[in-house]
Length: 278
Ligand SMILES: CC(C)(COP(=O)(O)OP(=O)(O)OC[C@H]1O[C@@H](n2cnc3c(N)ncnc32)[C@H](O)[C@@H]1O)[C@@H](O)C(=O)NCCC(=O)NCCS
Ligand SMILES: Nc1ncnc2c1ncn2[C@@H]1O[C@H](COP(=O)(O)OP(=O)(O)OP(=O)(O)O)[C@@H](O)[C@H]1O
Image 1 (cartoon, rainbow, N blue to C red):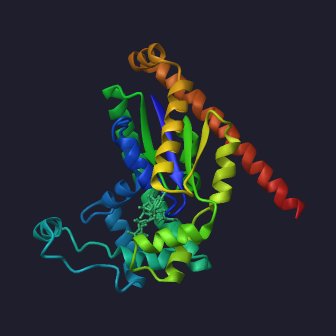
Image 2 (image 1 turned 180 degrees about the horizontal axis):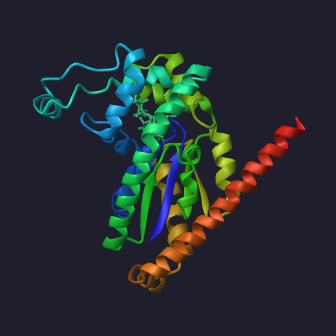
């Protein structure tokens, strides 16, 4: 089974690509890191308790009141699991370039990312047993979290102009001010760098989907990329063999991780050298 890491930057179109990939004719299973990141901090979970203990003392608006119109919220209240987290308030604490925001972001990532990784590993195993030829890991922070090394192929959804990103973000999330939108965009590695990192993996293991045009063009790009990935896989016999041979599958997975890790390390060393030259 091929692990396809789907990434991009804020509002470049990952979720749109993810929706295309999950629908016919591809019908690929999607493991969405944002969905898991929400699930692991629901009231009553370990992640929830960690966030409360780290952020509540310094964030008075961290918790929302229970929403009587929401069945889930009522369930949390009836079970005494606690009030849901105010994501907007937490976002204001962690998005931005100021040192204290970076620090808080690192704390939040340190709580959530290991929990998300664990949930992802469980889901990947499940889809492997179901016999899918590929599974999509939709991870906005793929490079930031280091999860790129586990992906056989990385698909990076890119736009050429940061203003397109800002416009799509603010059109979609109407409540965001200009500054909040810039803080969010600035909290991730830039599109250009992610594209370079993807290309550094080589043409078979790194694919860039350019999303500057309309939705129809995007559909064409997705079609091209999926047929490339399918064509460059080992074929049906290879897939069946991998499925039936856990030791073989583990060996191939280890080899893929090692190759990706080498690319990542070479990239980081080059960056250090470039910085030293400045
Ligand atoms: C700060 C939080 C509560 C804000 O929630 P909110 O509902 O407003 O935003 P949402 O979760 O939908 O995220 C929207 C986008 O913001 C970006 N983003 C989210 N977290 C981060 C982060 N820690 N660093 C940089 N960008 C981030 C991603 O592109 C994501 O797709 C939330 O984003 C969060 O819990 N972040 C930490 C977990 C995380 O890293 N999630 C990303 C997937 S692993
Ligand atoms: N090619 C396109 N043309 C016009 N609008 C688009 C295009 N691609 C995406 N959009 C719109 O841009 C917005 C952002 O797209 P999407 O939600 O897919 O991005 P994302 O990368 O998943 O964002 P985030 O990281 O914030 O979750 C959405 O409202 C989407 O409908």
